[in-house]
Amino acid sequence: MPPRQPIAAPSAQIRVANGPNPRATRRPLRSHGPSIGRPWRASVARGDRLCAHAISAAMKPAPIPPRFPLRRVAIALAALLPLLAGCGSKKDSDQESGADVPPAPVEQLYNNGVDALQSKRYTTAADQFAAVEQNYPYSPWAMHAQLLKAYSQYLQNHYTDAIDGLNHFIELHPNNSDTPYAYYLRALCYYEQISDIQRDQKGTLDAINALQDVINRFPDTAYARDAQLKIDLGRDHLAGKEMAIGRWYQSQHLYEAAIGRFQRVVDDFQTTNHVPEALARLTEIYLVLGLRNEAQKTAAVLGYNYPGSSWYAATYGQLSRDGLLAGAPLPTGSGRGFFTRAWDWVF
Image: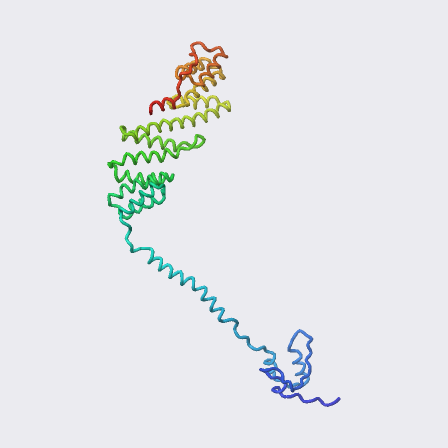
């Protein structure tokens, strides 16, 4: 076996910083095996006196400089800019918001509200009148602005806000010349909220109570006359609710409950337009139950008070078929309902 050639010094064999020396000859390294350091350990085992630190230094990759430092700085600045801009814009907006700017003169605010009200810009009108009340609470304009603000809210169907404002006006100015109108407008706010007869009628009762309050306090005014007509219409609405319930009981053959509802209409709502129907249905139920005397008496009341109504014509036909026409008046065409009598009373 020929003698082994001496291995060059580490500085000539492997250059740590610049890689292997092209003039030096190096034995090829085996690439198999899981560990990169095995070939070097094999060379050492064969007597290659390589310095361990030189080998590790040669295999260690060069350090990688930080990537894109400027981009990171730019991203950080971009994240801070909105915050800085927001602080500046808030400060500017506070300065431009007019915190130290006095409000417009009271005459200008009030006239702006009147102009908006006349042009049907009710939201703007309410805001202008509220500005008068807020900035000039002790001026003579504030009292009128408070009332007109409630009127603007009423025209927008904001009844709750209008009622609150009117209650406040009535509390502050109980003896003012505009107080009767405040009571009347408050009653209208309740009246406009009356729902159909299929729903709860608490709103109808509230409206009737508010309208009656107008009549009691200001009996000789136009407000009282209109309130009385609206009370009659509200009571007619309550009677319609009772009639709807009574018809349902009658359809279910719950005659006792139906009689109670129809009788309440006759007793408590005598001026309403539902009384003829209530009397006719009472007569019909009495005939079904075999109460002939009660049927005759009820039919007589119906014929005497409403001889020209269609309900009495139908009841007269029932009595004729059952042979109970003794003492019953003939139907006529002269009978008038509640709304006809109310129309004649008003006009």
